[in-house]
Amino acid sequence: MKTEIKKLKKLGANIQEVKDGLKLIGDWEDSYNEFHNLFTEITGVLYTSNFVQHPDFLKNLSSLGVLYTSNSIQHPDFLKNLTTLGELYTFNTVQHPDFLKNLSSLGELATSKSVQHPDFLKNLTSLGKLYTYKSVQHPDFLKNLTSLGLLYTSNSGQHPDFLKNLSSLGELYTSYSVQHSDFLKNVKRTFDLPFLYKDTILSFVHSTKVIDGITIHKTNRIGYNATEYVAVKGELSAHADTLKLALIDLRFKESDRNTTWLEDKTLESILSFEDSVLAYRCITGACSGGVSHFLRGIKEKKEYKIGEIIDLTKNEYGNKEFTSFFNKKIIQ
Image 1 (cartoon, rainbow, N blue to C red):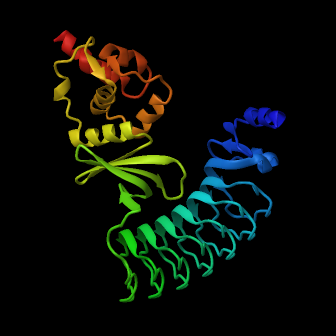
Image 2: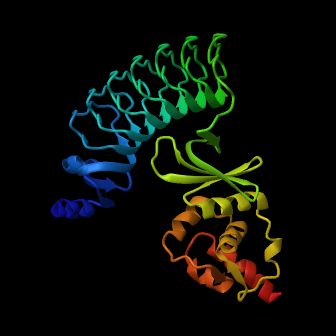
Image 3: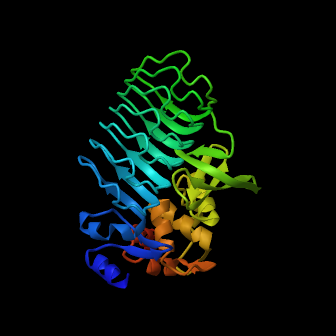
């Protein structure tokens, strides 16, 4: 496989060797097609719109970030081994009932302007978001679905038995529609664990504990395998790859970017790791995802001098604003 990996890297593919094959970090490109049978995971997007795929294309793929398959007719065996999918966009399409038949968990399904076979995605039980506006769905479509984060079904007329087994729903958007009085009759308005719906994200909860009045859920997002921590305090919630970052993000939301606690600090002042991250985010407005990505590339310490933070973040987003915040006090 070493020869194939060299060729793929020359084509610009960011890949990792994983069990039973290769993982592509990023979107699929047509130039990778001759190596399709080597891949088991794709983190980014696969576009298959406006054409029909061969059933053996990417036959070993088990995990995919996003699939666009609009204006298409798919062979029932295309992606037959796929078990994890983040988002599926299948507009203007009629799908074979066995397409993606092994999929049980999906982050987002957009199937607007479509007519779906009643058995399409028949094994799906958990779904983050469903967009099905300008559509008429068969009453048995998604009949086994019990948990849904968001349903957007505007400009539609739904059969009273559509989603009849749904018991948990986070948000409902149904403007410009006339719904039957029995539509969603079994739904409760908020999720019961083991499902959690916060910040428009539907997650499966593996465990829960309370630390100093903050509820911590160890979860994975529906449609994804990676562990994620959700910190909840009152009406505020925060998601992150680690418990530490989730708690920092919650503090950031509570702070409303208040920087008064930093007014007496100098370049020689020492901050804990947690306060260092919070200070940088409060001053610069850097997002949690960007900060998390940056932290993965450095060796974490318990404490940092503010001057050291400035050096570490050189050429990173917000560095000039962070530096200016403390240099202004020196000038004063």
